[in-house]
Structures are given as structure tokens and as C-alpha cells.
Image (cartoon, rainbow, N blue to C red; front, side, top):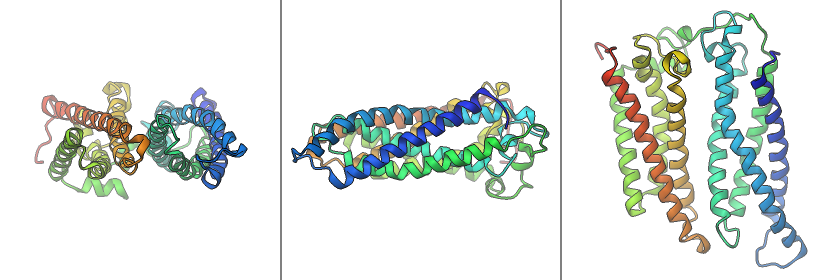
Length: 333
């Protein structure tokens, strides 16, 4: 294992978050089985007293869970120089077989944790805990994922050894590679551009429509999810090329580095923000008929839709600005 402050912070925090989430999930099972807001029993009163405290504590831990995704990526990038052949986070993540599974789990728990925080925020505004069962049900879904992430992340960091020969991003994100990256790179950049801008425009239009009319919440959530996948494909396929000003460098991690102004961090943050707020609109749509939330949810959805549209617009604007004003031109595409 490599001794690094960020690695230690990630390992310790993941264990604490796992333990706390597991405890809250056990409490959630009791709530799902025994919660009855109309009851004045001693058990019900105990549940009501404890649920607010537990929800508040879990909110803080899950907020750090969101931050840990970026901390994990920054750590993988900052220690890449310890491995032979590595140029960025790609090299670190390929040192052993647990690197990319950890990253995928972190992205998945990021999205679900963010949705839980949205549900919890809305639930706290209702006078009768209207979303207590849905939010603890979502927590039960999140718990095994966080536990799996803790185990896989621990195996990844504990398996790191200095001077291991690993792969560079050039070999993984090139047209001669295999896997998902090769499938993306096999596509001509022009169809990828058309698809990316078309879906982005539709997503923004659907979001604006929802903001003003309150209609199409589920459609907006679906478009947000699709746009997340296409934005990631776009970064690999053509957006990154304009920042690197190289026709064959498709790495989605090098744009996080100082040489490119760390532009990857705001791009990925905007992409994730647009996604979770868009999905949040669809999630809250399910509960619009709750009597205690009939005025709260529409207002919250409107804020989420505005945040999603704004962050997607800025993401597209930054990418387009670089494409238009970079000295690099992607010829033949």
C-alpha cells in the first residue's frame, strides 16, 4: 500500500460512511415495517424522535460521499508518477483490476446519494414525514453499493505498489484499443457531434418547458440520463481533442491536469450536476400528489430544472467555446 494522505482519508471515511449507512439502513427496515404517523405508540414516538437526527447525520456523510468521487480521481491522478508508464489517472486505475470498478461504483453511489439528499430535503419540509418510506427504501438500495465500494476501493488501494509497470492513456484510449473506448473512437466525430448537440438542445428545451409549465417531468429526467451518457462519449470522442490540440489523444482524464487548466473538474462537475438535478425532477414527480408537499414539490422541481438546464448550458458553452476558438482544427470530420 502507498502511504498518501488522500488514500488514508478515503479509506477511513469510506469505512465510517459504510458503518453509519449500514446502521441507518437497519433503522430504515424498522421504519418500513412499523412506521405509522397516525399512531401515538411509544415506538412511533421513538421513531419520530430518532429519524430526524439519523437523517441529518446521514446527510453529512453522503455529502462527503459526493466529494469523495472527485477526491478519488484527484488522488489517482496525483500518484500516477509512482507507476512506470502512467501519465495520468488511467495508469493508476489500471495498476490492478479494482481501479475502474471502484470508479464506476463511486459514480453510481454519487448519483444515488445525491438523489437521496434531494428526497431527504423535501421530506424535511413536510409536516408528516411524507417521504420517509421512499427515502429509506432508497437508502436500502444505496447501502450495499456503498459497502461494495468500500471493499473494492480498499482492495484497489491496498494493492498499489510503487514502480509497477502499467498502461498509459494513449494505449487505452486509441483506435487500436479494445473495449468500450474502442467502440466510441470507431465512430466518426461528426455523427458524435450531431448527436451530442441534438440531445443537448432537446434536453434544454424540455427542461425550459418543464420550468414554465410543470409538464414533462419524467421526459426531462430521461433526457438528463441520456445526455449524461452522450456527454461522456462526446468528451472521449471529440471534446477532449480540442483541449489537447492533438488529433489522437482521447483521454478523459488528462484534462484534469494542470497543463489544461484543470478544466476537467468543472466540466465533470457540471455534467453530474445537470444529471442529478434532472433525475431529481423525475424522482419528485412520483410524489407530487402528496398533500403535505403539493406546494413544496413543484417549487423544488422548478429549482432543480433551472439548475439542470443552466449547468448543461454552461457545459455545452465551455466545450463549444474551446472548439470554436482553439487553434486546433479536426480536419476531415
